[in-house]
Length: 168
Length: 254
Image 1: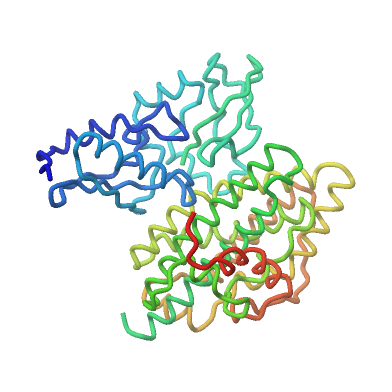
Image 2: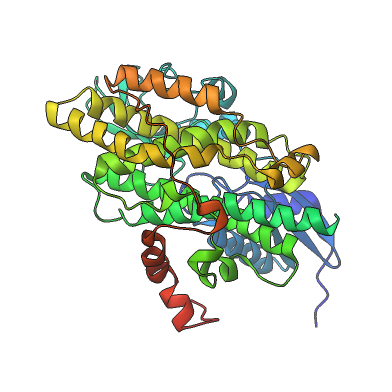
């Protein structure tokens, strides 16, 4: 049996930086903010991840991809799912937001401002900016898009439907 | 944790988990039957959120109980008398208006309740509540907007969604029921009082109803029993469908 070489936290993050989110493949699991920690464990590492939504169906696939990516680099890895603190889109960094925009998904607005709107029927959050033409003349077609984390929007200026990564 | 608290907490977690499991299953019945594609996706996503929350709550319930039952054992191998969900969530889907009204009435209570429960002294429960709260906010908004659109829509949509509200009304009282078990857990900072959201719930519902040109019923009679395992005939049929595969092929993996 080959003893794996010790691996640094930075190495692990670099490996995880190549693991794509299956539902938003333009982002890595690190950029999405669901990797919450990496700790050494025996001759390997344990990676803490948190789901975006309670019922996120991609969790098993993400777990499998992470363990697989680590194994491919000779690292014994295990994934631990943590639920607190709850994931927020505020953990998606600026660079990742720009990637989303270029991919055609409007990035999330700040979650804090959004959460103050307790009963949002009476006070809607500001309109989402169209990722294609930059117009703010857009409307929400549905709060739920192809996945729970996205909503369906329509741009009245360029007449393009587009997805928005919901503030969460 | 003493035996009394453990038993209380198990029962309390079943209430929270069963509400979401049964309503989530009801919403999943819409998958492929939504009136428009966007709505099919929305209803299925709400189902997914609720079942995800139920998964976490029932997993915790099984751990608290300590008898080796996991969330699947609790979901698939209990009969209706052992379910602790409120009657509202087991009512059949009816038409689209019935489904939206049922979801709104439930989610509005859940939103106000979870805002408190996220400060539970039980760390895991607090974490689940904080996460569910974020999801519930979208459910309330989505259903609230539909109620306004249907209520303030055509004569037919107005009449039908008013009838939905009138039919669902008698099942709302149970959401606010506060009993001794809950009081014991509230005293320890674990649970929050289910009756506390009453005033805020009434106000928000009236605000939405007013925008929707609907009348909030004031019928005082309330149907209850779910928290004690006394369910309508509808739950048995739902469980038969939900549990058949797991019971026919126990321990099956796919």
